[in-house]
Amino acid sequence: MTTTTTVAAAAAGQGPRRGGGEAARDGDRVLLLRGTHNTGGRSARVDKRVLICGEGTLEETKVDARSNAPVLRITRSAVVQNVHIDMVGFRESVLIEGGPAVTPVLDGCVVACSGDDAVNVAGQAAPFLRRCELEARKRGLKFMDSARGEVFDCCVRKAGGPGVQVFDGASPTLRRCRIAEGAAEGDPGHVWHKCS
Image (cartoon, rainbow, N blue to C red; front, side, top):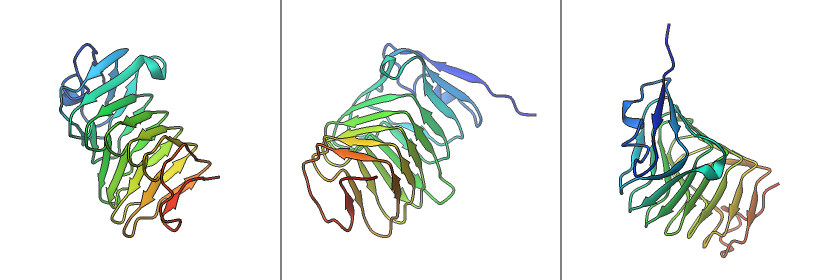
């Protein structure tokens, strides 16, 4: 019989990695307590099957990152829920990568990046994004290699480049998504500006 443990990560200068994330095991729940979590310039490697969720409403739990490394490097099928990530730096905010068994979920999150992309998906990873708001200096979503994924009811806003861009043999599915206030037109064969 397995038990689920809730590991709380306090705000006030503790990022998800230095808070409860390191102590988590497969099946655990990492609760980011209300407040602003500062990453201290470090990435949180999500390599366990965990639920990372923000306490309270979306605006009450924020991860504030000032670095040139992704806030989250997701390499396992985890769930990130109700978290606002605000990244200032020249890397993507969230990097999802790995083989076809890597199928993480981002649900009800805000992911912003003032210097690069919001979310990058690489390898053969196939994430599920639902009800997320993405804002970035370059692209809201970038799919590379043979990445797949399903994106539902998401909004990409204020992208300085294409809202969604697909490279190589990647093949994501977008449904009921909205891409607004983007600056670039891109190649219509590989870029979505409006989804229905």
